[in-house]
Length: 193
Image 1 (tube, one colour):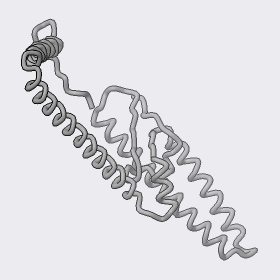
Image 2 (cartoon, rainbow, N blue to C red):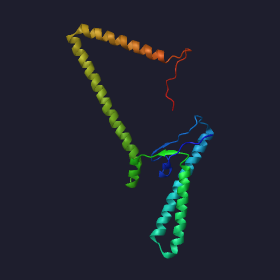
Image 3 (cartoon, one colour):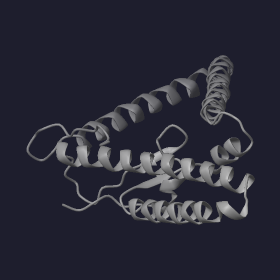
Image 4 (cartoon, helix red, strand yellow):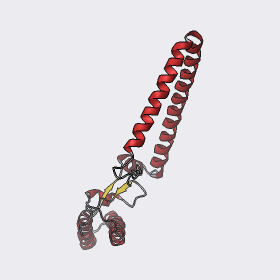
């Protein structure tokens, strides 16, 4: 059984809350064993991240109250940090965790990373509303133009409508034909997740 691919960003805090975690398995077999192993690997990444943060805090306390007698604890803390960072690097071979830079900047600014998600969703909603408005406007324009053209050129508009009806019917038949397999079964057009 092959293991998922990994990016060295695993230590950047990839518990899935702050960014997009992408577990890319090299096998197409998504069994329960693989899922359990992935959960265990993710737990190891989270634990390693928490341990690293604790070691950095311990280092901060040691350095802020440094004296000649605290040199040995400082060196031990540094060695423990290097060891844990090495462990993180090894864990990074099991996962590809991607965190958007905007999230890192928000964390650096002391803000909640959930703001990024909220802002992205609000931006999508605004763009969707704009697109819907444009679509409705074009539909209204088309209807208005057809009404005006029907008043001025009734024969041409009737011919246009017949052509549109025939074209739509032909397009529908082609679409239906493409979804039928040679053995007569209907092709499943659901996208694979």
